[in-house]
Length: 78
Image (cartoon, rainbow, N blue to C red; front, side, top):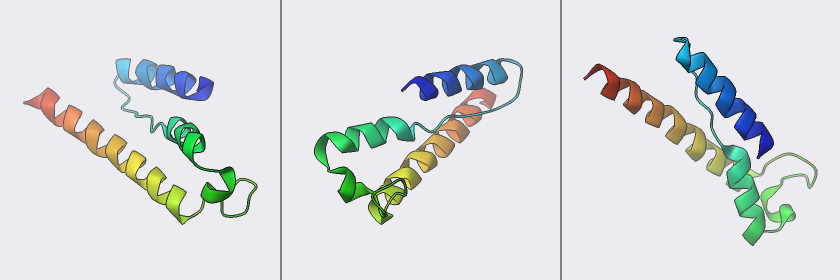
């Protein structure tokens, strides 16, 4: 997950100077899904587009990232 690590560093660097950013780790989830599902099962066109199932997983990850970040910001001001 090389890109996730790069994005985490960029996010950390930006956050350290007051520019709020977050990283939704969808690549890790995709890799985990491929351990138990065939690529055909999570792709809508067998090339690079996610199907409805995978899009739902992405939505959950992004929502958790956003809501978790909001919770962290709220905790900082309390």
